[in-house]
Image (tube, rainbow, N blue to C red; front, side, top):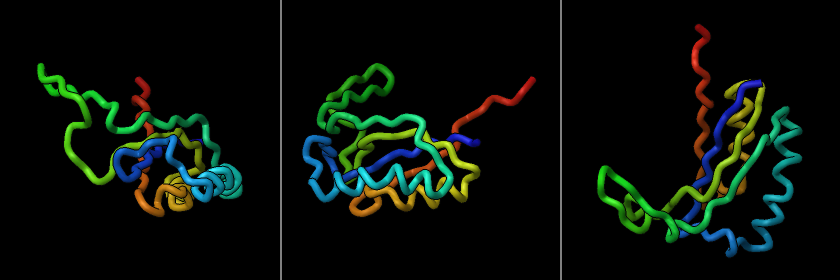
Length: 113
């Protein structure tokens, strides 16, 4: 099956310790929804709040993300799905789409030599 990175965007600072019980219930349901559509979450990670980020551009190192933004990357997971259409259906069900968003990208596979 093809693999996709699903990037989770949440309102800044996206502190995982501030998830509400209602949102947690939606997250608990999500893996079953993924499987119903024929997908599989391979692995996933929540990130520390955006306030803990360190940005590097060239020789410049600064605290915080590159730019001030209303939404930040809060986490990501690797999804296996039969194709992009199924991956998008799965991503649309993610609770992050309620007040943030998700981005789906196919993982890069180098061409065979």
